[in-house]
Amino acid sequence: MNGFYTAIYKAEGVNTARTLMYLTAPSAVQVELVSCVITAPLASLYFIDASVQRITTLGTPTATAVTPTRVWAGDKNALSTVKGNVTAGEPTYDADGVLTAEYDLFPAGWRWEPGVTSYLQPAVSVGVRLLTKPGQKTDIRVVLRF
Image 1 (cartoon, rainbow, N blue to C red):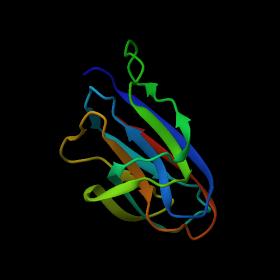
Image 2: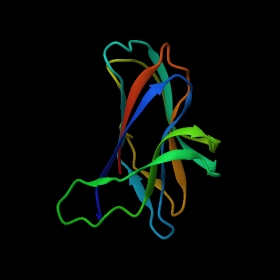
Image 3: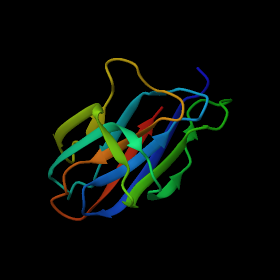
Image 4: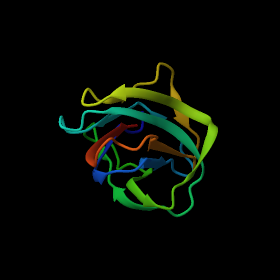
């Protein structure tokens, strides 16, 4: 293992279906996706439809840079690019590249832990998508481990 990382982002005031976070693997390294968790405040009780899905065309989305933290002391800094809260310029997604698509009830949270190893090939991007508009404006926290 070359490194184990956690990327966390809190998107505030979400009121549209959109990409909450995306990760792009480095150009010469594949990345293993370990898990993804989405949570919201207790007051934001509603059903949520979300997915982790491969991106075919990233484009130039307007998003906030996220610095992944190292889980294990001694690991090098992550080489992957991670961004959160896409507010404009949504990426184009691969309809056949859905790694998971779940419909769950907040505030229990939405959790994805693949039963089989999920690798991103070098230079490939994957997005964590909110597929359904929230029932009310809410803050949403995404934790992606890779």
